[in-house]
Amino acid sequence: MQLLSSALKAMDSLREQAKGSKDYTLKENISNLYDTLLDMKAAVLRVEEENAELRARIRELEESPQSDPCPRCRSLVGSLRRVNRTRCLVRWD
Image (cartoon, rainbow, N blue to C red):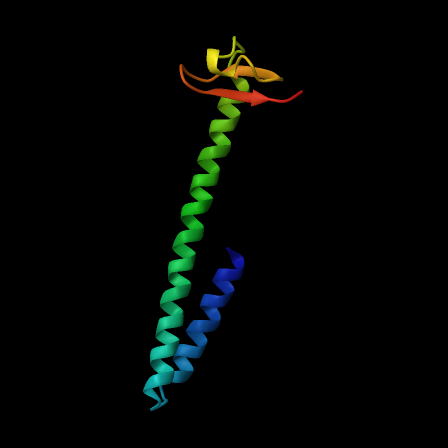
């Protein structure tokens, strides 16, 4: 995220410098690049949020009491914990 923030600061500086330019192609390219960086920043934020949710879910599953594996998972080797009626969390010991 810090890398994107640094890139956005550099783009702001470049955009300020280009304001005095009469090269409209340059201005358009800078604008397109700036838009792309903002889209990337939004995507990074979404991924970080999803990652935090998944980490919380993993902690929740790890702390849940252990029970028998579901019938579909009985044939797997390893320690299984029941997550719900249709899914099991596989823990290989």
